[in-house]
Length: 636
Image (cartoon, rainbow, N blue to C red; front, side, top):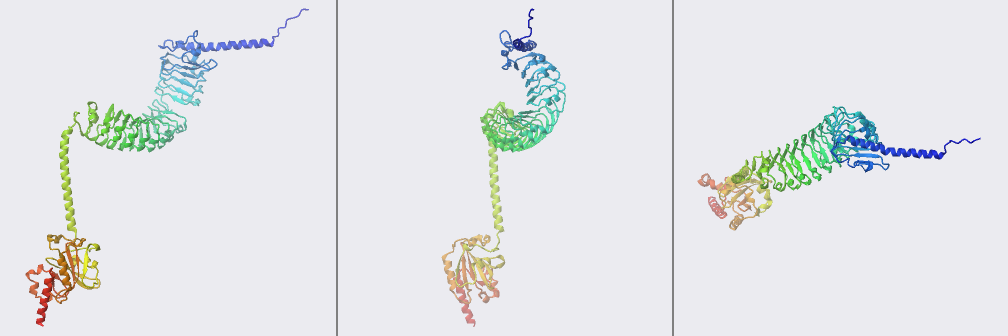
């Protein structure tokens, strides 16, 4: 009986078979990926580029091909051939067969044709850049590219309806650029002449770095939170119809470098908090409706290079603090309502290359500090500037820079007045003005003096209150004060006038009546008529000692025909004599009282009697008194 062979395979045979199978698979993978890359090369074979010079399998492994990156398993993960002058159509059926492919960067070439539906097979793709090419047709559905973080189709030639719905699945998307393509109109708030507003929920995009929706027809008010997104570096809303103010929270945008809001309908004042956004490099707010003053806090923007505020409604003066923005190279404030002088601090901006302040209401002279700048553009036209154009700016290249300023002059530029002729005219004009001002000043002071003199009360209308400005000598015990004497010198108390002074009746507080005679100094002349009570009370007495001696003598006489002298008050140009009432003229005939010398007599009046003579020469009055006393005794 013969034995039959055992055909049951030993386990070792299974292991060997498995290893052989895996070996075949591992060998087929690079072969498959190599074939996909060679298909890609063939599609672009007519490209005028050297990018494929290393794509030779016999000489280089595929992972050493230019623009190809592999993982440790020798699987292709990246194709990076941007700006390589590639031309042709893309074979996405071959490209997306690279199962580990994560990045396709083919931007800035001349690729054409359409993107086929096979692009949806690149399910591991995280980065897709096809921007700046010449594709045609629609963008296919992208909803299967759930790992995608970066999508750039900007200016790539696509048209038709964009698959906005597919973006709902791209939850990892961080960068999206679809601008400058002739897509159909759509309410989605991005470029391409779209309409609508910015959704409120955009304020939650705290990781957003760039927000660009320029060149559309978007409108409404920008949500306040957009201005303060912490990681935002660019805000570009130009050429839309946005309105409302620039949010005050912009100071919280610490990373913001570029703020482009030109050609909209923004209004209101610039918030002072803009000075807190210290990373700002470019501010472009032209052609809006902003108003008010430019905040002085702009001085904090040390990195600011460009400031364009033209064609708005800004007013006030150009802030001097602008000179603190040391990095400024381009300033345009044209077409506003700025007034005042051009800040000299602008001349300290050594990096300044362009300065446009035209079509405002600026006045004054052009600062000499501008002469030190090296400007490729200078425009100060259509303002109200005056004076001499600085010599270094009076060159033909700047001739139109000063047009529309009728007050400017120059020796070098045509169509401007000569400063030398203006200098002579200005000198004559200044002389005329100086004379006019001097004459007006003299006239004004004369009028004031006239009003002062005319306005002062005559005859001591007002009481004198300066107790320390006069001296009083007493000859008897007095029951009245100096203040009563001075206060009594009023026009209504005047009872007589004479060649040397006036006589006033004084009614004391105790009811007694006395007479006060104001005697002027003999050399005071015509000034008597202009003198007020204040002048006679000036500090210090200049009265002659002879007069004092006579007054003392008169005060010591006791005679019925000589009035009793109580005191004298002296000043630098006049005296006051305070006397009782007596009967000198009681015994003089009416003819004597009405005589020729009546107007020049000095009189002391009493209630019941006529005037009693009392001349400056006290001795003569005393002698007359003695004589009259003798006549009276004889009559008795």
